Image 1 (cartoon, rainbow, N blue to C red):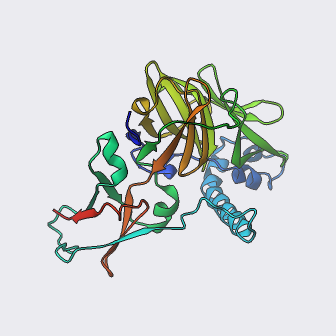
Image 2 (cartoon, rainbow, N blue to C red):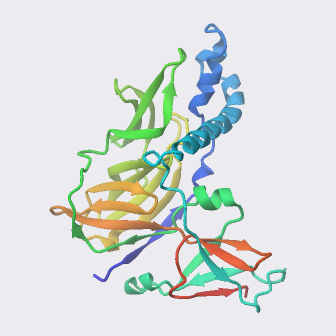
Image 3 (cartoon, rainbow, N blue to C red):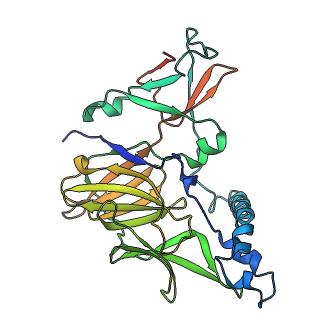
Length: 320
C-alpha cells in the first residue's frame, strides 16, 4: 500500500461544527442553582424549567471561565496551550476572480496537495468559513491522512474506559465538584464519577459498530469503531445532557479501513493534528493526521487564508 492514505469523511453533523450539539447543560448551571436555598425545587432538579432557563447563560459563563483559564496558562511555558493555531497559509487571489460578482457560484479553492497523490486523490475542495471563532476553534476535520506504520512504544489504554474529561466536572446540589470519566461497556457510553464509578449519564452507541477504544480531546470523544470488516474513527460530542433519552451527538465519522491492515485495536489522540492508531499485530503503530480543508477570505486585500499548507503544490482558485 502506498502512503499517505487519505481517509474520507463519510458523515458530518449537519451544522458542520463541534458546537453543533443541541441542549448543553454546563456544570456552571448547577453552580448557579446552588446559590438558591436547599429546599427549592429548582436547586434539586436539573431538569426543572428554572435550570433550563439559566442554562443558556451558564454555558456562556463556562466558556468565559475556560477562556480566562487558558489566558492564565499562557503566561507560563509549562502550562501554555499549545493546540492553538500559530501558523496560517496565505494565497493571493488572481485578478480575474471577481469577488463582487453575485452571479458567480462563489469562490472555490481547489487544491492538489502533493501528499494526496499516492492514495489516488488529485484535488481537495476547501470550504469557506465566515468567522474567526469558528475557523480557529470549532471546525471539524475534513479528512484523516494516515502514514505508513512504524514500531512505536506507547502507553495504550487496556479497555475503552477511564477516559478523563479535562473540561467538565459534575457539580452536586451541595456544591462539591466530582471529576468525570468516560467508558464504553455493554453497548453504552457511560459518564461516571472518577472515584465511585457511579453513572451520571448513560447513552447508547452502536451507529458504527463496537467501540474498540476511545480518547478525549477538545470537548469530544474520539472513538475507534469496528463494524465487521469496516473500521471508523468517529467523533462524538460530550457537550450534552439528555441521559437515557438520546445518543451522544455524532459530529463526524471517517472510514479508515483502506489505510490499516486488519482491524485496529487502540487509539490515542495527542492533539488536533496527531492521532496514533495501533494495528492488530505487535506494536505496529500508524500516525494519523486530521486535516482541516477550510479557508477565510479577505476581500479587502484579496487574500485567502488556509489552515493546511497547499503553497508548495499550488492552489487553483476559481469562482466559476
